[in-house]
Image 1: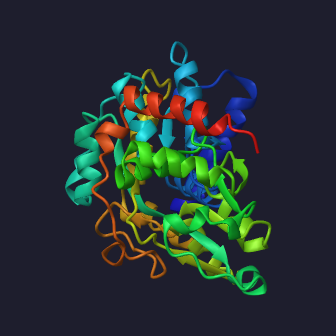
Image 2: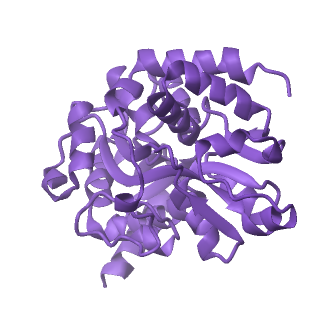
Length: 342
């Protein structure tokens, strides 16, 4: 009966939207930053659970941050779900998101709670994932190349034109890489490294997960992504090896925020509470998303990278999620790396 009732409510809501202006009690606008294959079942499950019609847009996290900032005077979105935490923290600092302290915080992993505290409860962690890279084992074998194990290996002449990575202005994954390298190597050496890497990059994509798919298809030999995005390709049978760089690496806290001035505030809070439940976070498993969930009781996919086996740095989310530092590093990347000829 519950499912039938939910479906009926959704149909009624859809009919109402066809005849009248949007009504807050019946809809929710979500900006989603994970892959489409995870966004869609999240929306479907929420609609079935609540009868609320969800209007979802999927973009990269950098694009979503820019859109929310541009729409600040007249917000179009209610919930910003997923994507690396740095832009969420920047948005929190700039007052683009709404403070909300969930009663479910006690159920969450310490890193998720720390994220909320750092943002003065304007965002919260919903999953975590480690940064790394992957390579196509078949292509590597054909060319009789040594397997890359470290960040330094990716600048070798062997990989000229064979590395794919996203643009840090559009992609939270790639900004996380930029901030990670600065923390691992120091800023001067990190930018020297990025300039050397640029010579080997065949494409700067918009989406952070795209390089993992390019590696799986053989379009690119190496892709820098979060490790879980490469694991997805492995599970699907692609000839891919996932690497945690030997020098150490950073990680993301995928986050969720309520947009300040949301027109459907009550429904936004319903999504927020629902998305922190073990049931909602468990949807990731069926969607072949291999991040670590923030709710302690949510199932963690067996294939998810094991944080205990990765040399993770103590990533400074507050510093590198700040407006000043994020803007400065991106401007420096544009000037010193992105502007270089290919």
